[in-house]
Length: 497
Ligand code: FRU
Image (cartoon, rainbow, N blue to C red; front, side, top):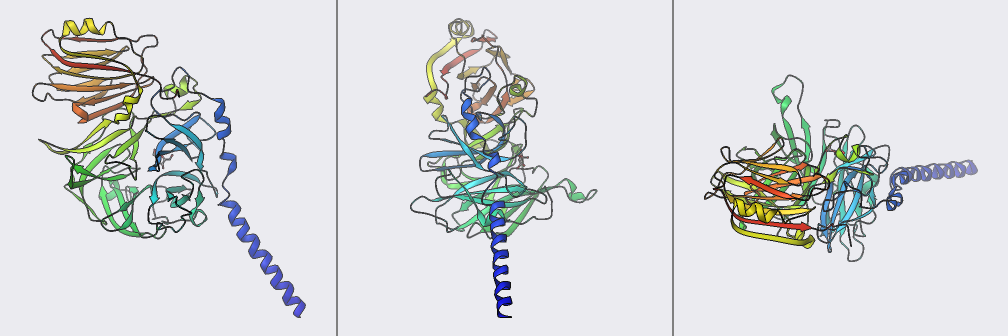
């Protein structure tokens, strides 16, 4: 009898042990088949269409920026990545780091699919107070919070004690926020530390639409949660809006640079936004909705958590779907990120609005600059005939008397004086005259054009491929138009050391 009991206990121990081992193999030891980064070293950044100062993955598909966070001298850019193909799929968090948001170094893929699910979008934070209790030595823990994409979706997390180089799943990859009842329609957690309430806050898109035919059907929802330890989350409030869809970001920004007057900005993947107040649980606004980008290819942007300075900087995915210019040209990579821009709230005659501006670090790439002041159209045309540049950061201020056309390497940017707007293809960017003047800044890379009108009051981010072999810039305008200033900076590649 005693012997039997002994065998029974022994068997039980084996079974228990086996179970816990099985759990570990499924979760903590992630799917190494997706760790394809070794093969990326065969590729360089020299292809004809490879963007030269916009982030791209060495190889394969990516979409949303994820986990953007600064820590100890490094900006981390994780991203939705397919480690095996130039199409969407196998979603994994790719990873790149940069000291200046301009020169990027891609690192091995950071968070790999596990347990039959993939890793969808999310954010990363630096656990300054060791809320998660995982800190080792002096390095603060980096905590990535993402959507575990296996129906029904839930929110999960992983942490790194070595500055994002390796990640462990929190609770073996189980839910930290369980499915809220909307199947796949709940994803892309934004997490940040809310200093005033001393809590972690999560902002989650939970659904567009309710039951078919109900008035709520069209409504998107943002669900706010709070937490003390990054693993136990309590629902705090819901915000319902028609415009809300995927990849919410939520940031606090000073108005006109005044730190005593801050407002919160909530935006979604297509960059609709509202400005309001947040008390740690509820976001209140006047429900006015604005647009943060007027281009054809700006999506799922997010901002760096734990910024090392007073700036809030965002990067968006320049989405161009399956048949992108890169895919069609047989490039080894697919899709590109927008150039990082600061986000500022400024008071305008219409109210407080968002302004975006390329980060000043772009200046590190300036190789040659041309500066002209107070010129007639005729003189400007003459001066421009000596300018040749491939990668461009140019600014112009003019006093329009009629419509104006800028042709940059074969790409036309037209100013329509009657409507007070620039047009590039189908994208229109408002630029009313201010004291009779209009300002435009243009960033041009091998596959993109970004327009910043009137100091970033309106921005347009678009795919655009300049004419190969054409390095000229020209201007045509009514002879009475005054060109107050024109600055053209030629850039060097950010990929050359
Ligand atoms: C937005 C999005 C996210 C999702 C991810 C999947 O582009 O659909 O909602 O997490 O892409 O790759």
